[in-house]
Image 1 (cartoon, rainbow, N blue to C red):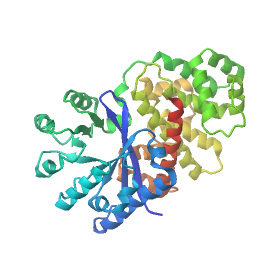
Image 2 (tube, rainbow, N blue to C red):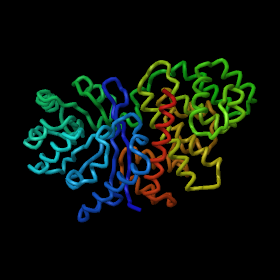
Image 3 (cartoon, rainbow, N blue to C red):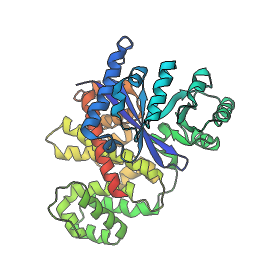
Image 4 (spheres, rainbow, N blue to C red):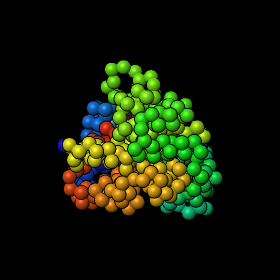
Length: 411
């Protein structure tokens, strides 16, 4: 199996709505002398992954930005990617020759959108491509503010979408919004801390109480009563339960049925997910959070299945660690407060607070994967020593597909 690396980073619009993902495809070992193999690996993951899963299942309703090298740009493999779903991101390493310009025009003509990656100045290379590309990605970390303003003013002459990449702090996010960027990407949004520091949303507190009851020793009747006081929650829960593959013979129509049929573990799981989906305040950032948290939960569970195939409770704990890892951001609370309130077991506490222990290291792996930090990913894989890069890639594709099915249900 090809060694490939897959990461996914959210791209948001000016209103913090999730509009796209950059899919980070890399060869497992970057070997300068072996470029054709890197290209082959990237092409293989696209073809294999999307041949098996279908790119819509990986991306949901969002577009996918994919890094393209010269070899891939010129090859037929690229035509396997659906033009209505994909933005081809031209790497800065591509030399702009007449042949490359001709190829880009051909691809544009058959419906592909193109983006120019890692722009830090307007040079002859940029000027050649501006009439062709749809999106220009500016590396805002590498450009000082005066120069950034000049570049933006120049780019305004073309009908291109301006995307700020490497936005890694709230200050930089505010600055880029003020400068008039259309889209934003960076680790600041991958774990969207834009809402950290907001007070706990009152709508989330009943859910947190419900979660405490489900994780504690409360009777099914007490849980049912609590849910009946929360019609929105009940509705969401029944909708999720009835639609996301439990293999149930009949529809579940009552909360009591849901609680009994699902059992405590599964109910706990849905309440955890509902924390991210039931956002009546309309705070659209929670869509990006929901995506990230659900992928983390499912991916942690799939990794735990490889780690301990017969230990179902370990897999459930892994799922919980993934989902809980973003609760501090969602609720604007310290993780320590959440851990105390929910009386979380020690193993999970260590994982969430320090990224230590077996589950903690797996969470650290997933976070490195989200950031596209290949070196860190490989280092942790070596450390935990039961998971390969192809297994991680396969598990992530499965987790993305699962999350998009849930996301469709929750809206």
